[in-house]
Length: 479
Image 1 (spheres, rainbow, N blue to C red):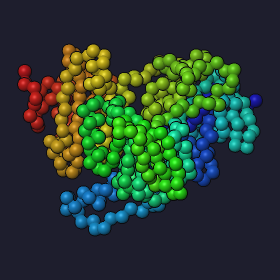
Image 2 (cartoon, rainbow, N blue to C red; image 1 turned 90 degrees about the vertical axis):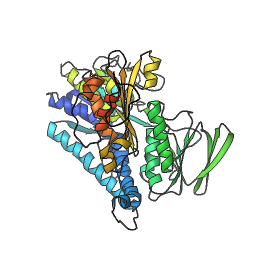
Image 3 (cartoon, helix red, strand yellow; image 1 turned 120 degrees about the vertical axis):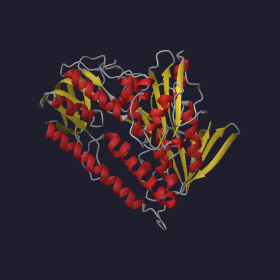
Image 4 (spheres, one colour; image 1 turned 30 degrees about the horizontal axis):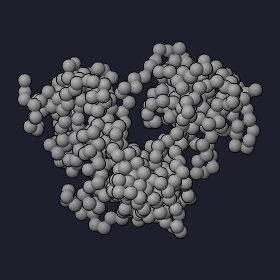
C-alpha cells in the first residue's frame, strides 16, 4: 500500500489540476494522477485544453488572423507590408512552444503548492481507493479520504467517416497539419468546427462545413447567430446546413464525402477532412466494475449541484459530468469541490457560465437567449448596439458585429448578454459580473465607461434596453 491522501484527483486537465492545487492550498494532502504522454515522451499536465484544445487552437487562430490582417487590412491603415506569406511549420513550432511552456508551468505549480504528481492511469476501485497503472504496467493502490474524477472527454467518432491518418482527422489531428490543404472539409458547424475551419480558411484553404442540423449555432441568440453566419460566409466559409454525412471513401490522397441534403444525395472531394461532431465523456475504465458510481447511457457521471456522486467521498467534475464542456466550468467546479472537501461552504452559479467562439470576430454569450426566455414564458426587453457606430471600433478597423442585452421586462434584471465583435470574449465578462450581482440593465446604463473603448457598445446596449441609447437612433420612444 502506498501513501494515503486527503484528496486524490484523477486527471490533470483544467478541472483536475485546479482542484488539486486548491485542495493543497487549503491544507489538504493532495495528489493528481495523469497519464497523458506529450510529444517528447514524458507525462504532461493540462489535459485536452492545454495540449490539443483551447491553447494550441488559439495560437493558430491568432497567427492566422494576424496573417489575414497583414495581407488584406494593413493597407487601409496606411501600412505597406509588401508580399506577406505564412510559414506553417514555424507557426506550428510556436504553438508547440506555448503548449510546452504552459504544461511545464503546471508541474511547477504542483511543486510550489505541495501537490503530489502521480504518473499513470487512475481507476476508482472502491469508495476510498484509487489504483494507478504506470506506463510499464505496474500497479499501485492509494488510499484517499476523497476522490475527484476529472477524466475529461474525447472527440466523438462517427461510422461514416472513420479516422484515417493524415486525411480524415479529429480536432487533434487538425492542429498538426504541416501544410495548408487546398480543399478542406469540416463536419460539424459547432464551436470547434468553426474555429478550425477559420484557421485554415485564413491560410488559403477552400473550406466547406457540413452541418446536419438545419439551424446555425442554435445555442446562440438567433439574431447574433444570423449575423455570425453572414460574417463567416463573407470570409469564405461555405457552411451547408441540413447536410447529413452518410459515407466517405479515401481515394489516394483525397477523401470523397457523401452527404444528403434537401436536394438529395450529394458528393464532395477534399484533400483533408476534419470531424468535429462533439465530444464524449472519458469515463470508460475510470471506475472499476463493482464500484457503484452511477453513469447515464452516454457515459456521463451523475452528480448533484455540488458535483457529489452517489458514493460518499467521490466527486466528479468537468467534461465527464452534466453541463457545458468548457475548461473554465471545469476549473470552477474543481475549486468548489476542493472547498467543500475542506469543510467550507461553496456553490457554483451555472446560469452565469460564459461561452466564446474564437472566430473573427469573436462570438460570446452568457445567460438566456431570446428563444430561451420565450420558451419559459418570460417577457423580455432588449437593447442592441452595432460596433459600426463605435468610435473605437472604427479606429480599430473592427466595425463588424454588435452587443445585445436581454432584460426581464418587468424587473429589468439582466437575463443574458450576447456579443459578436472584436474582443467579445473579453467583454462578455461584464455580463457575467453583472448577472452574478443581479444587476439590472439600468445598473449598466448608469455606469461610467471609458471612452473610446469597445466596451462602450455594452453601455449603449444597456441604454438601448429602455430606448435611451445616445450614439444611435432608438427604435423605442423615450419615456
